[in-house]
Amino acid sequence: MLGDKDAIATVAVKDLGKARTFYEGVLGLRVADAQGSEAITFKSGTASVIVYRSEFAGTNKATAINWSLGKDIDRVVQGLRERGVKFEHYDLPGLSQKGDVHAFGEFKAAWFKDPDGNILALMGQ
Image 1 (spheres, rainbow, N blue to C red):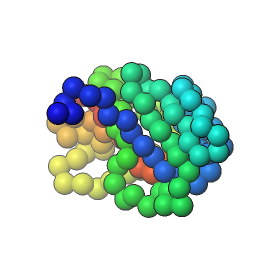
Image 2 (image 1 turned 90 degrees about the horizontal axis):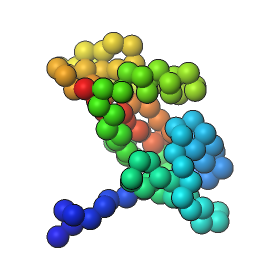
Image 3 (image 1 turned 180 degrees about the vertical axis):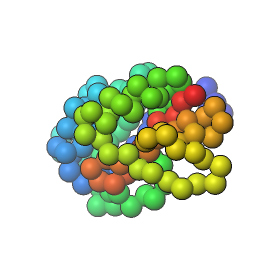
Image 4 (image 1 turned 45 degrees about the vertical axis):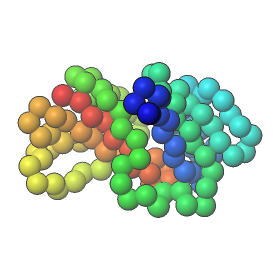
């Protein structure tokens, strides 16, 4: 029923101004619609990311958004690091780590947090 419909990522934040600076200025997402003081819709490729104001911002302890980067993961990690993004490091079974990128065979991943502590991930090969 939903397999041919687009999904939209939604992320709770406390301060829309800080969120806009991060998602637009640091990550490079494009603003598609800013709904006053409650939400901002960004475009990321053909997908949408809604960042909305909530008192529950940053309470999710799992990954909120993943970006699939293919072979560009190392380049994107380097670029985000140059923009001040600090990456998370996890000691997970079967994963090795080279700098900020974790690997499991050909699969690579890197995790970082937005200003509210939401966990965001980059995936590639």
